[in-house]
Length: 197
Ligand SMILES: [Fe+2]
Ligand SMILES: [Fe+2]
Image (cartoon, helix red, strand yellow):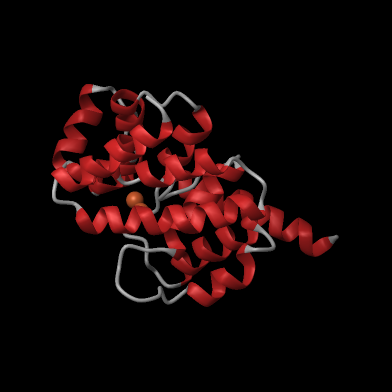
């Protein structure tokens, strides 16, 4: 299937499952992510596909995601065990791979860690992560919008770090996922190194 057909099929999937709001959100994330892809010189088509697919698991309930994760022998994080919806990033990867035959690991990885990020994150991972936060799925601009916008065109690391720090500082995390903790620690170290140069 060529990219145009895949994109059409992805959009239909959201619409057939009455996920119009999610479709609007992923299209906004795609728009933001494509802008960032051009700034950071990464493949625009890959970023667009990752953005459109990142929340495709919205067609399933958190309980159904949890059951599927169990059947597929996922190693389940304590945060995912308690809050099943946290699995949605990993289930979206599964759907991208199995229903849309996406085999590109840069696309799949970016989908898989769009909520939590992870250590050793690629440019694709960081672009989808931060685009998802800038173009969030709620009304109006997010409260951290200015904080992220002031950094995102200069440094993805600084923008990702600022967002995760904002979450910790404001007690916004129900239960931090291990991947998020590891990403935060790694970015924190990079920020310290930058300051000491
Ligand atoms: Fe998401
Ligand atoms: Fe999202």
